[in-house]
Length: 166
Image (cartoon, rainbow, N blue to C red):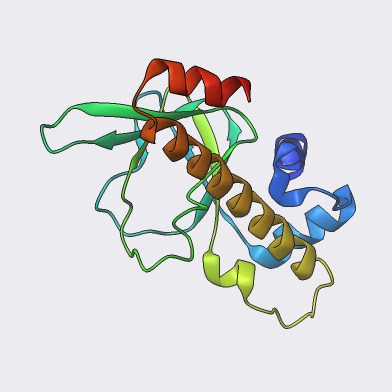
């Protein structure tokens, strides 16, 4: 079932350092849901129940946040192999804080957060690698956002350029 998408799956950092055969075993154990979305369909909508981490297997999508005035702000573009929802997966949020919309016809898998951090009946050896990869991804995003806040807090253009060059 996942065989034709294995190359897209392997592009994702969540599976870094895990062999192709182990990924196929892993997917059989994790039992991710596979969704197809047409162009302009919403893969996830703000306020809807959070159902897990998603990976774009085919197509392109955008992550959108709407402000109080109703203006849509594009947070990021998602390409084949990209992941979304990892920043919210283990937070106290129960609903999606953003929307994910397909820019083209998409195929997406969604991994349940319970299946990622839970232990399975088979005591799979790859669980540790998967969790470590997820922690690494979240840490890198947190560091990136921290740097972004640091740049935004500098008031002058001269200060921003100085910080950038240093």
